[in-house]
Image 1: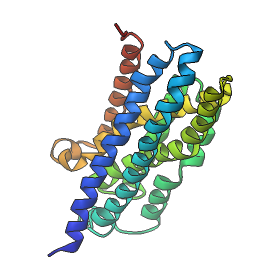
Image 2 (image 1 turned 180 degrees about the vertical axis):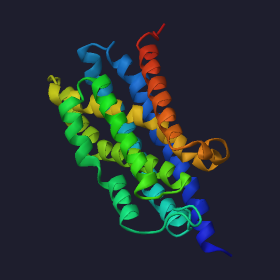
Image 3 (image 1 turned 90 degrees about the horizontal axis):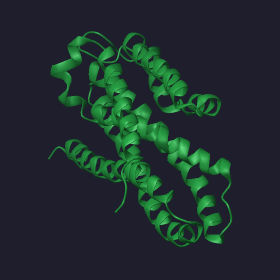
Length: 255
């Protein structure tokens, strides 16, 4: 029995299951719960939110943790150990590849700085973020010499790392205080509400191109030969789709 292959299959299964749980709740929060919460009065929020939100946030944050953890394990098994980081005869392990892997997992402080400086205007922040993603992908290809599958999955891991960090370091800590204030019947700190909402919105935008990267093994025959810019096109389309869904969610009404 090939135990490494078995571990890879089991990790992939858990990765997909946890990802469905996490991203499904992310969409529920942003497209269903937030518009619905705006229709509740103070007394209703005081009763509903302390009972509903902690339950949803429990599965939300642990879904994020398991998705990220199994994703890193899969990267190690399939790419670092499995030899898919470079095209045959093109790239090899060196300074460039190590630097770009470090960028993948350690970019949160840069994102944090940009989010605090420009995050209030989603269009401005989105434009800056798009340029930054383009530069990083270009460097993965030219400096890191990543293969098609490698730069696609590492872009996805960068998005996933930022999203998981947002969940555990920004959204969950802020929501705990917001829920406690709501339960007490006092007004939550507006800054905490804004932070949780902003980072949840950013995660929603990142999630759609992230899903493309998760199926990258199935896109190699269609776009791999065309160039790295296809990943940027997918990212732009994903962000446009999310914007349209936000517009639609604000218009859907209850009976």
